[in-house]
Structures are given as structure tokens and as C-alpha cells.
Image 1 (cartoon, rainbow, N blue to C red):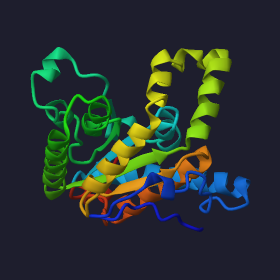
Image 2: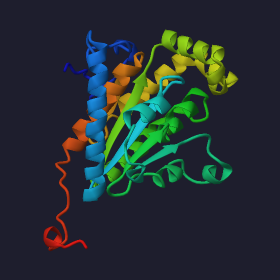
Image 3: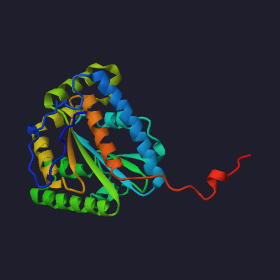
Amino acid sequence: MKTIDTRVKPDSKIKLSDWDADDGAIVGKDKPDARERLDEQRARLETLQELLYAEGRHKLLVVLQAMDTAGKDSTIRHVFQGIDPLGVRVASFKSPTPYELARDYLWRVHHHVPGTGEIAIFNRSHYEDVLITRVNGWIDKDECKRRYRQINDFECMLAETGTTILKFYLHISKDEQKKRLEERRDTPEKQWKFQPGDLAVREQWDDYMEAYEAALSATSTAHAPWHVIPANSKLVRNLTVSSLLIEALEGMKMRYPDPAPGVAETDIV
């Protein structure tokens, strides 16, 4: 199986226009075969997640960031299909409440990091506080740089206390977003997803690309790397994310805990 180089190297400055949102190398020409591989990878993820939960030593944090329609919800639904919900939690970060605003911006995030044996998935994340805030001028450049440093320190602390961190930017083109917004508008079952505010954010596309480039460049580290995931194709997106998750989980070298003494000889009446 071909792979895609998705990792943003630490201390590198990236331009998202250099990354191909249509990169389909992982799928190749045989889509049925690729769908079969995705099913196999989901089964492997199910096994690895059970092992993670059973061993109870490691923690995995998955961060999903993207422009509207790139498929954060869909990625969670399709990649983690069949995973035992006992060991997986999803946190979705929307506009902070007045109670949250009265505290530091990382306060509400820390409550949702994974415990031992858990996978926590952030559907949007603490990175909203260096994206939407920057684009709308709610923080200045100096505050934004401070937040990059604080986020790196926060993630370093998580890594040093046993959390594996994978951060995925789901990369779609502006043309693909237009198609997906039109599909939402024109499909009755999807119209509930369409919000007028989506168009206002779309008008800020270039500003968001600049903000994402700055954030990814400043916060892709050895202990918490960013991956730019080609997301114009949903199949490519899901295959790429699941492959990276499997690689991370297999790298933990997990094993099932030893059974209680005498289990194998226990009579069950």
C-alpha cells in the first residue's frame, strides 16, 4: 500500500497551497480494494482499542481541525466505526460559555484529555483559540505567539505524562468546500447542517489559511506532530487517518494484562 507523507516537520514553515488536497496515492486506482482495506483497518483499530483499554497504561489524544465541510464528524463516524464506546470519548468545542471565558482558555480543554486506557477525540480543540481569535482580531500577534508557546507546553506536559498526541488537519480545497456547501443547501436531509455563518467564514478563507499555516508551523512538534490529511476524497481521508492511528497504537507495544492466578484451571458450574 502506498503511503502519503502527511507530517509537518517541527520548526518548518508550511504553505498549505503546497499540500495536495486531492492526493490519492494511498487509494491508487482500485477503489473497491481500498474500501476493503478500510474495513480491515477498522477491524484492526477495534482490536487495538480493546488492547489499549485492557492494558490501562497508555492514553491517546486525537485532535481534528478543519474548515467547514472537511469532514470532522464523518471522520469520527467512519474511522471509529465499531469501536467500543467504553474506551472512547469525543469532545466538541464550541463557543466558550461566560463561565469558561472567566478562566484561561486551556481550562475547559484539560477536563477532556484522555485517562489511562482511553482515546479522546477533540472535534475542534484548543486550536480554535489561535484560529478564529486571530482571524477576527480578538487577539493580537503577541498574544497569539504566547498562545503557541503555551499550547506547546501544555501538549508537552501531556506527552511527558503518558499521552500520545496525533493532530490532524483535514485539508480540503476551496472548490471542494463550495461543492459540499451546495450539496448541503440542495439536499433536504442535510439542510439542517447549513448555517448562514458558514458563508461568512468562507469569505475569510485566505485569512484562515494564513492562520492555519502559522499555527501548524508553530505547534508541530516531535511529541505532538501535525498531519495534513488530503480530504477532498472521503475515502483517502479515512484511510490515511486510520493508517496513522494504527501506526501510533502498534508503536505502544501493548499486551493484555496477565490473568488472575488460577483462571485457566477454574471450574465453571
